[in-house]
Length: 223
Image (cartoon, rainbow, N blue to C red; front, top):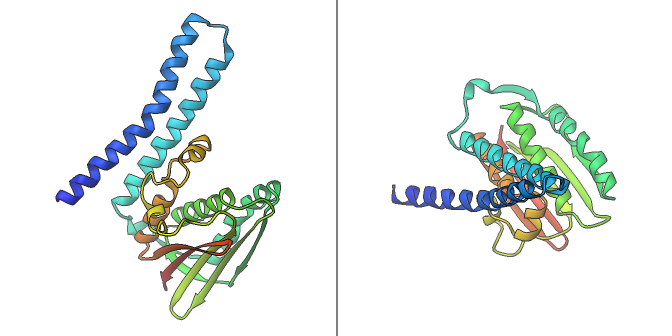
């Protein structure tokens, strides 16, 4: 109970810290706008910071819901191979724009009982993360295979490595390797925490590691 209470206090402190900055900007811009109503840039600042807060609150609500556990009634058997392939398609153009090579190897007709919407969100988080941390003219590969009695999903990208000793910390709420850069990109360190919750709720395991220039996120689901 003491450990749970401490984690809850830390969560509230972290969330409050993240919300404090955009709120301060909104208040300052609103006050300046009162004095200079013709200054359009203050309106843009208010809109940007409001969107930033909206995204943060949405992610917090998603994470809180996932941490309560899954509603198994929403589970259905799907063709995971097709779902993964469809989830990759929207990211192909984004990768192309950033001169990143994106390819995949997917075993056909892998069936999996799951919440399909959550698995889509999981893939979106992993692919977005891979693109964000790929080097220029880098590469991303997605693998989906059955190994023994496991479904193994991997995203492998060439680019910025995970610092040694941080491989487990990156799945913690609000954890960010580069805080200044992530704030500029509207990244609050919640994506991978959400991804871990989704995997855990599906009785799976997620891990991450870097080797030379490549970083691998590996997910294992029991068939």
